[in-house]
Length: 247
Image (cartoon, rainbow, N blue to C red; front, side):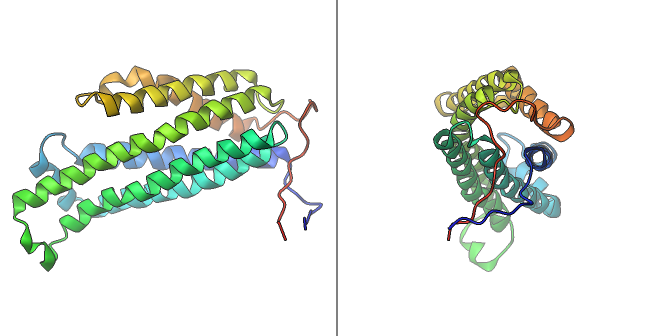
């Protein structure tokens, strides 16, 4: 049974919601990565990393919560994009949503690696079985595992961007250039993730140009959704998206 409400969201309302969610995702993601982990984690120096985290325990916890908020917003964004793009191809829109949620599930589980660092430095009695050097080494190990887990999640996201790019290109709601940019972004994410898996010495920060298309794409779409919305002048294959409740 499907329930339809005469006050269903319009495409532009969906677009504004997507823009706000996108902005929150970008802000929370950049905060946790650039202002928390990048400031506290010292590559190759387990002792200084552990000291930094202990001295900034609250900040490290806020970074965890920031990532959690980012993922919750990202799940909501997957639903909104599905609602907007299912008139183009319901199968592909559903596939794109599943790929994005696969990334969210992977990154959600991966957040445990972030929190394990706090548990190891908590000073709990059961940690007496480890000496200080072992604890510091384990902290760095879990943080390294967190970065690898992030790369695994972004592999799903790369294929999400590829499918989303096709849907954007075919949709009359968005400029076709966004579809092209999303395809380029998908290759950025895929190349970066594969390089992390294949080359032990690879650091994303040393090859920032690889991620430039992804950065341009994410910011451009976010700003467009916030300030421009979607074009409803063309009809084409698109109709007003509706949310339905099975029953």
